[in-house]
Image (cartoon, rainbow, N blue to C red; front, side, top):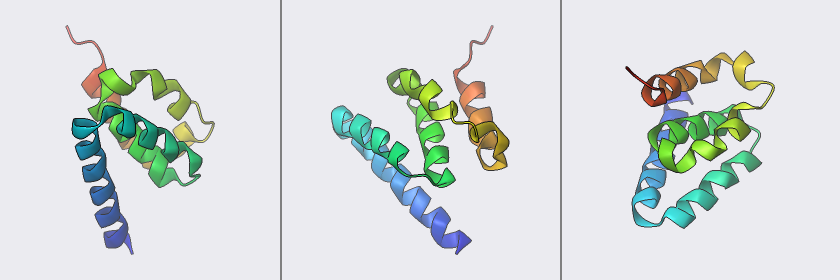
Length: 91
């Protein structure tokens, strides 16, 4: 079942990538819909999408990571690490 979940996640990521390139408004609305689902998988996906589309989605960052469980859930640590690594000021 882990392989299926990874496959599904890859497909959803690809769809979001295409949406961002083709219709920014639909991308933003779809991104917001992910918050309606309680599963950590969708929280991870939101953090990943913020990382990859930081300029467009940075206003959503606090809403996504403000959830009490986020920093207690080890599943999101990698996504948060890359988000910070890729989008913080570098000298």
